[in-house]
Image (cartoon, rainbow, N blue to C red):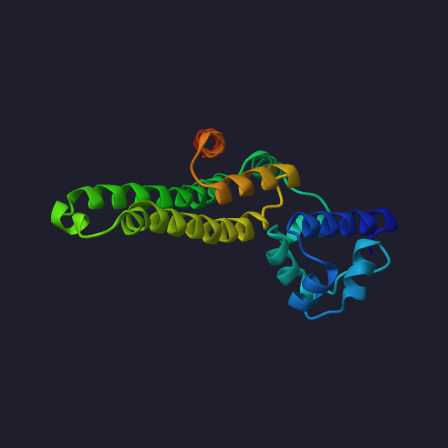
Length: 207
């Protein structure tokens, strides 16, 4: 039998890893087929997971059964945890790639301008001043803003899931995705480039 201190130690590990994954007690309980009260008892040291649940619980928490039974991570797992806490290469790569999508409306706008320049003058001369202004500027500008809003919403929903970024930083990046290209957008873009490069360098060192 494990002593009370050990049970508390195991419960604390379960609670810590669950919170790091952004899971509620109910969500963890649903995966394991137990109630949220059972999970609460484990985490507060008033109970201990059934032997039949240990393997599944370890898989969900992404640790070994031995680590779960000991109530502490191995040195290798601690190093991996420290690395992932500092910077996650896959997460940073996804963040950079998604933010890069916000450049699509800008490239589409430039492509439209180039296309307009290739249209025969006879066609443009057949339009009055208002129609020319609408075709050349208003329509592409309107589509540009709509695209920025759509991509901004998509990006905001994705970055909302990041647990390693503070809310003010998320808000600043989301604003840039809505605004579209400009000095502010460019500054955020280069900031994410630096984060991505740093993550890549650390990932290579870790491997």
